[in-house]
Image (cartoon, rainbow, N blue to C red):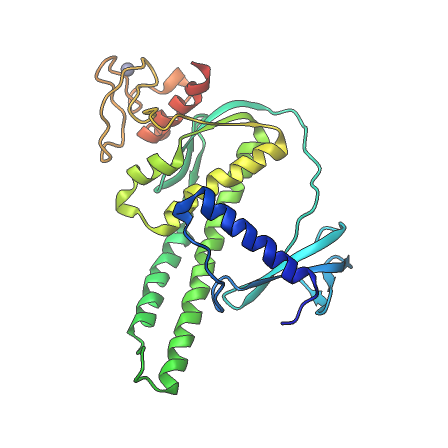
Length: 309
Ligand SMILES: [Zn+2]
């Protein structure tokens, strides 16, 4: 697609950023060229107008109708991207900060796989079931793709069939990503909006250690995304995000007496060897419910205590 002067300028800015990233964080690797079919997107700037809620006037392209209602704000530039056959438009605009007083005070959040999040106030966020289902589909479609012939000897039909299979796989991928993103957004918004201080673990490290069996890319991205969303949403809503030291053993400490003991992954209940405290027997402060009596909850309470030490 031919574009106005804005696009090449943006390309230069992207290049500059790529080199800066490479020079400061060498692990990211030397900048590589974009490839068609992977992260397809382009940038547009110029006179952009939003009207009637879901119409947007773009330079070169013309009027585009969107599925979602757009905010009626001035827009200077947009990025248009393609994900599994659907087109997306994104742009930045200024957001009015919400300064309503927070009801909840400090909350500790333990992030996991079986349960997306366990909070120190007793609330739990289940991992969406649809995600598991979609994951099964993902495996099936991935198999379909890998069974297709590749290489020099394949004919036109085989090429076409493989492309079709790849498309289907991409669609399921998108679904998985969307389901996960939706659940994460709900969680992070709730946390940032209703609490003045949110304490989480250092996710990169403990997340990987805890889940080495499930170390799928999707899971890892989930943790990173959780932290990222929480960071900017806390800024929006004027709350504070505290990240516990990576060596803080939130799952090993007894939240009742402070005793520390090894907690192998299969032990789902915390039974303190020192004070005999167990979440199965004695609800914490008599306020917490019995069904929330597990190691994740103990960890969440410890995270809450992390800032009150
Ligand atoms: Zn104890």
